[in-house]
Length: 391
Image (cartoon, rainbow, N blue to C red; front, side, top):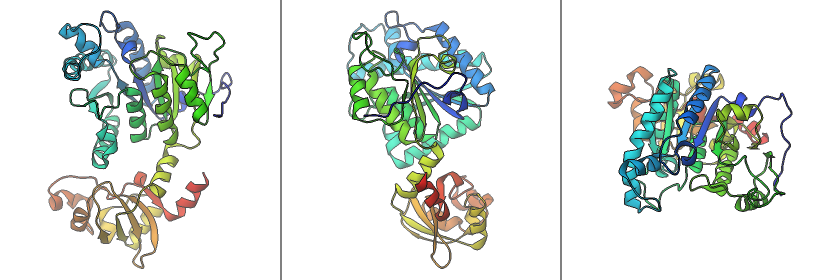
């Protein structure tokens, strides 16, 4: 059976308070009144207060928000009930403008810049698009903007849609190496049975291993929040868990829902066994087959061992057949393997810039790429691998 923990002791620091980067998923029912199609304005104001408070503490916030179709349905005067795919896409196109405006308005009053990012399933599974999305989101965070993400309903089809924003939020957490995923629901968390039908149902306060028993609980303890339900929330928690990211399911209907979690409102925490950094390093270390070999000089070797990134100036040779984002082996002149990492450039581009300063990249390639061929975050040295395996 899944390993269940105990409620953190009063006064202990919540994983939410400790987090550096937080992904907050908001369902349609929390944001939009299901009958009138109007925004829950006062609730959104309270969430904006929470976001502003977290940013004051220098914590990064990324929002994954549903609600575009619900808002667009009202704007277009569409009747209640299921919509054909093309009608849903049309409603999303109309509602997305209203949704983005609502976030811009409420966060703008608190001096927070807002960006809109639309993603599809392919953006997290296609290697090149994954890297583009990851780099864009990380850049937005670095520039101080809150990214508001939604599935790109206007172009997604029934075959490729996530089907819910829970798993989209988990993929974003994985993509951005977040350390806390908040799934705001219409129940307090995972129960042993459906609490609306069974008075003896108990809240599971902490889960350390997600197994068949935990998934069976989810199937019997559903939530009406959006189209996902508890099953997809557990699927999202599993993705986050594997990425070293804490996840929490909490009742989002409360005002100031993030503050409520920190203050100890009943919820379910999914506790990973590693950090996002360790999980990513484990994936780089053994999760991908190398597509090439990059030979580096002694100066680059010293720089990497000092915790720095690989610059083009330190590369003396390159072999293989790889594209941007592919795994490559790093070696010295004797072809002793030094480590492995994800290349920010293709083989042909590395061949053109190797031995040159990063300031020459634009003139050599015709575009301004990253200064590093392999960033330190995308690199695992051979000396680190045994330590990662032990963790």
